[in-house]
Length: 115
Image 1 (cartoon, helix red, strand yellow):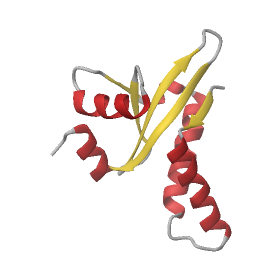
Image 2 (cartoon, one colour):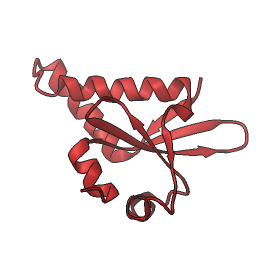
Image 3 (cartoon, helix red, strand yellow):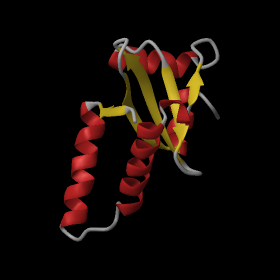
Image 4 (tube, one colour):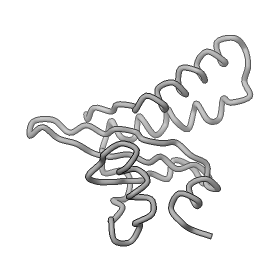
């Protein structure tokens, strides 16, 4: 079992979704389920996603490097239209996936420079 952490904006979004669901607002239930599904996949295997090369995806890599100072980038197709972007760090003993973003396909295409 691997550890999974959320960067502050993703953690805040998760809390917001949980609060809405707790109050009976189900409008974002699908997003919450997709986020939870991605977290569970990464707990089982941080290699559930695809490693993103710096050369092939410069725009996205630089976006996340500037924002979070990452050294590697991965993406997980959580559903047909949702992507989870994460980085993997290790201290030699433990591997931790840091979820940087959960985005719909439209925003993902924009970040990664796809048409």
